[in-house]
Image (cartoon, rainbow, N blue to C red; front, side, top):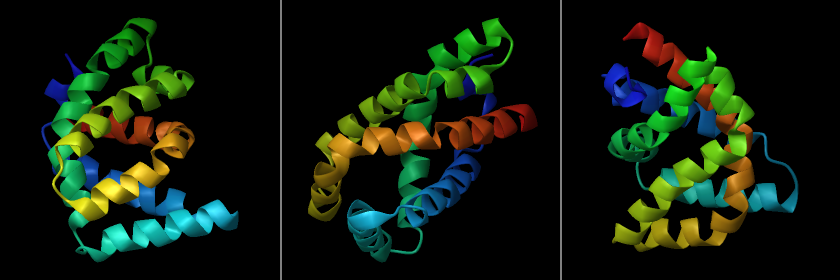
Length: 143
């Protein structure tokens, strides 16, 4: 069964992913970390539930985009490990969804913030893939 079919509660996955994002951003160091924390703070300042809500909205598209990779992982016996081993590819897949969503966005704050960090964000997403894969695995098993 496809990942997008297994996960019936995208808001639960989104809430866990929002926590993962908080952890990832808070762990950033240096000047680039300060800039990311500031920008992330601006985005979170839009509303307390903005990030989980945005993630919930994009989750069905993201899960559908990850379906082929999840299927490959199932064939190999461990989709969580497969997503983790293919972290760059997983990050590219996720970014293809967010890029398309940002292109359709009318929120100038979000579009501007995303534009500033888009080039460097792939490494951050790739670094978060093991945590994301674990979240997806937990939610897929719970289904």
